[in-house]
Length: 295
Image (tube, rainbow, N blue to C red; front, side, top):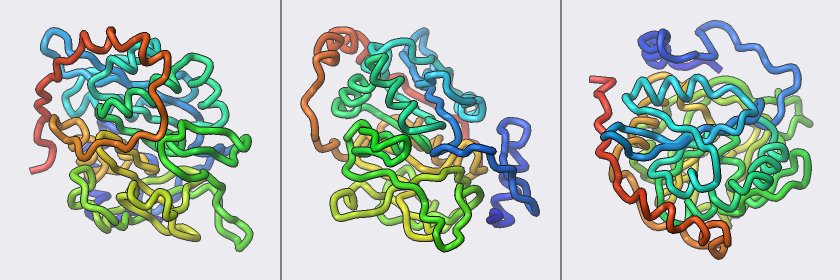
C-alpha cells in the first residue's frame, strides 16, 4: 500500500530527520527472515535533570531504534536509556519501541528483571508508549517461538497472519487507521495511513475490546492500537509514518496526557516493592514544551 499524497508531502518535510521506509511508487524490501516485528529493540528512560525535557527509552539491544531516537529528539526531548529495572520504575515517561521475536524479547525482560518492573510501572499509572512488539508484549501470550507468556497486562494471544488464502506475510506497508475509541493520542487520525512491518497480530475480542482504540484490516481486522489510562501502544511505527506519526508521538510526550487508571490484573511484584523508595525520589514531572511542528 502507498500513503495518500498528503502523507507523502509530510514525509518529504522530515526526510532529513527521520528514516522513512517507503517512498511513493515502490514497495520496501522485506527482511529475509521476518520475525514478529522484524527484530528486537527497546529504548526509553527519562528523569528530570537540570530542567531538561527527558524521556526514558527501553532499548535491550536487539534491534535498531535510530528512527525512534531521531523522532523524539526532533520533537525537542532528550533521551536516557534504561540500564536497570530501577530505571524503569523511576521513569516519568517511558517509550518501549520493540522490534524482533516475542520469545527473545521476553527472555531478556525476564532475565534482567525488567518484566516485573514494566508491570509495576504500568500499574502505577505512569505514561507508557509501546511500539510494534512493544504492543504485542503487553498481551497474555504469543504463538511466536511458543507459546510464550507475555507481560499479561491485556487479555489476548498474539497470532501469525493467516496466509492460507494467499495473504502476503509479513504485512509491510501503509494501512488506514479505523478509530474505535476517542483518545487524545489518535485525535484526527481516523482514516490516516500509517506504516506497518509485522508478521503477527492480535485480534479483537470481548475480553480486550475496552482497550482497543483503533483497528486495521489486512486479511482480517486486527488491533492497531490500544489505550487505557497511562498505557498507550501502537502496532505501527509512528516514527516512520510522516506527519500523522509525529503528531502521535508529540501527543504522548505532551504533559497531562493520561486517561482513566489502568485496571489491575496482577499484584505488585517483590522487585517493585524493593525499588519503590527509589521511584519516590523522582516525583517531579518536567514541563515538556514541544515545538509546533505543523502549523
